[in-house]
Length: 264
Image 1 (cartoon, rainbow, N blue to C red):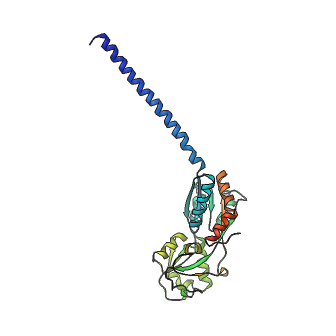
Image 2 (image 1 turned 135 degrees about the vertical axis):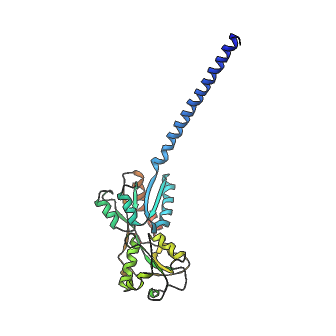
């Protein structure tokens, strides 16, 4: 090989290195650009904890809120008791929509929530429901009959379960039906027990049974403590404040009432 060919070979070699370096630099710039753009959704992401009975209205409320603000909202469903425990253990929720007033009040006292942010966004209604159109009568007398299984949410974790226990005790039926109870971790699971036939009937939220095939008894309000469902702010995020303001709007209240709740 002569000197000329050797020189050309070296030039080609360094030209190749240069191309690789240029390509690497370009890819780095692209990666940084993607990384920079990728941080934007997380800045607008809003995480809210929602009591499982409020799943359907929450879904519609979040949809409307996202359309107006462009924010990404992540909803975590569960029993009020379990969500409360997660929040106390540091779960990064910005808003808590509980199924009672007790836990939001505790969070305020524990300084885990913004003081003065708590308000009642819905008042729940308890019903006895069965997919069987002929099973549940208007007075709930079926509870005195020889039925199979009765589903309720865990009274220690779920306000609707506590209300169901209160009704049964006031009717003098708790001891009679206790051995036939199927306890759901939350009201969502309780509804599933009934809708799938694992229990013949169950105490659920009116919003869950409304419009479904079957029979129900809307439990008189004097038989249980009012189910005041309260919301509370858990962070100083502007999006969280916007969501709570939207929840107080007449548009949101009207939608909540359509799903079988009262509002204030």
